[in-house]
View 1: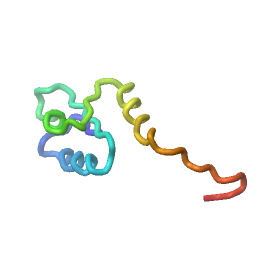
View 2 (view 1 turned 30 degrees about the vertical axis):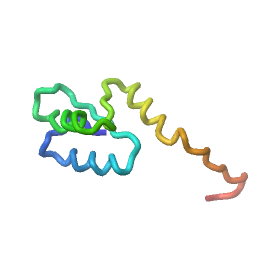
View 3 (view 1 turned 180 degrees about the horizontal axis):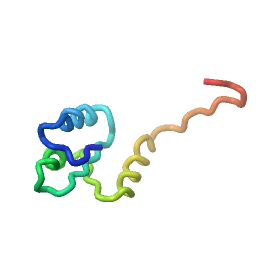
Length: 82
Protein backbone atom coordinates (compact mmCIF):
# COMPACT_ATOMS: atom_id res chain seq x y z
CA UNK A 1 0.00 0.00 0.00
CA UNK A 2 1.48 3.31 -1.10
CA UNK A 3 0.05 6.35 0.72
CA UNK A 4 0.68 9.97 -0.33
CA UNK A 5 4.18 9.36 -1.65
CA UNK A 6 6.32 11.96 -3.39
CA UNK A 7 8.04 11.10 -6.67
CA UNK A 8 11.50 11.36 -5.11
CA UNK A 9 10.59 8.98 -2.29
CA UNK A 10 11.42 5.29 -2.46
CA UNK A 11 7.73 4.52 -3.02
CA UNK A 12 7.99 3.95 -6.79
CA UNK A 13 10.80 1.42 -6.38
CA UNK A 14 8.97 -0.30 -3.56
CA UNK A 15 5.79 -0.44 -5.64
CA UNK A 16 7.73 -1.96 -8.55
CA UNK A 17 9.03 -4.73 -6.29
CA UNK A 18 5.56 -5.26 -4.84
CA UNK A 19 4.02 -5.56 -8.31
CA UNK A 20 6.39 -8.46 -9.06
CA UNK A 21 5.69 -10.23 -5.76
CA UNK A 22 2.06 -9.56 -4.80
CA UNK A 23 -1.26 -9.91 -6.61
CA UNK A 24 -2.48 -6.48 -5.49
CA UNK A 25 -0.79 -3.14 -4.92
CA UNK A 26 -2.93 -0.39 -3.42
CA UNK A 27 -2.46 3.38 -3.84
CA UNK A 28 -4.04 6.05 -1.65
CA UNK A 29 -3.00 9.31 -3.33
CA UNK A 30 -4.57 11.99 -1.16
CA UNK A 31 -5.18 15.37 -2.84
CA UNK A 32 -3.92 15.32 -6.45
CA UNK A 33 -2.09 18.66 -6.52
CA UNK A 34 0.54 18.41 -3.71
CA UNK A 35 3.97 16.93 -4.42
CA UNK A 36 3.36 14.39 -1.64
CA UNK A 37 0.77 12.65 -3.85
CA UNK A 38 2.65 12.53 -7.16
CA UNK A 39 4.12 9.04 -6.81
CA UNK A 40 0.70 7.52 -6.16
CA UNK A 41 -0.77 9.47 -9.07
CA UNK A 42 2.05 8.27 -11.34
CA UNK A 43 1.51 4.65 -10.28
CA UNK A 44 -2.21 4.87 -10.92
CA UNK A 45 -1.65 6.32 -14.41
CA UNK A 46 1.07 3.89 -15.51
CA UNK A 47 0.16 0.61 -13.83
CA UNK A 48 -3.35 -0.72 -14.43
CA UNK A 49 -2.73 -3.44 -11.82
CA UNK A 50 -2.44 -0.81 -9.06
CA UNK A 51 -5.76 -0.35 -7.27
CA UNK A 52 -7.04 3.08 -6.25
CA UNK A 53 -8.77 2.90 -2.89
CA UNK A 54 -10.77 5.59 -1.13
CA UNK A 55 -12.38 3.63 1.71
CA UNK A 56 -11.18 1.09 4.27
CA UNK A 57 -13.78 -1.37 2.97
CA UNK A 58 -12.03 -1.39 -0.42
CA UNK A 59 -8.71 -2.31 1.23
CA UNK A 60 -10.38 -5.13 3.17
CA UNK A 61 -12.04 -6.41 -0.01
CA UNK A 62 -8.75 -6.47 -1.93
CA UNK A 63 -6.84 -8.14 0.89
CA UNK A 64 -9.56 -10.75 1.40
CA UNK A 65 -9.29 -11.73 -2.27
CA UNK A 66 -5.57 -12.51 -1.97
CA UNK A 67 -5.20 -16.26 -1.77
CA UNK A 68 -8.93 -16.90 -2.14
CA UNK A 69 -8.18 -19.19 -5.07
CA UNK A 70 -5.72 -21.30 -3.05
CA UNK A 71 -6.73 -24.62 -1.45
CA UNK A 72 -7.21 -24.48 2.32
CA UNK A 73 -4.19 -25.25 4.49
CA UNK A 74 -4.08 -28.74 6.01
CA UNK A 75 -4.61 -28.60 9.75
CA UNK A 76 -2.30 -30.90 11.75
CA UNK A 77 -3.94 -33.61 13.85
CA UNK A 78 -4.51 -32.69 17.48
CA UNK A 79 -1.26 -32.83 19.42
CA UNK A 80 0.97 -32.55 16.32
CA UNK A 81 3.11 -29.43 16.03
CA UNK A 82 4.39 -27.81 12.86
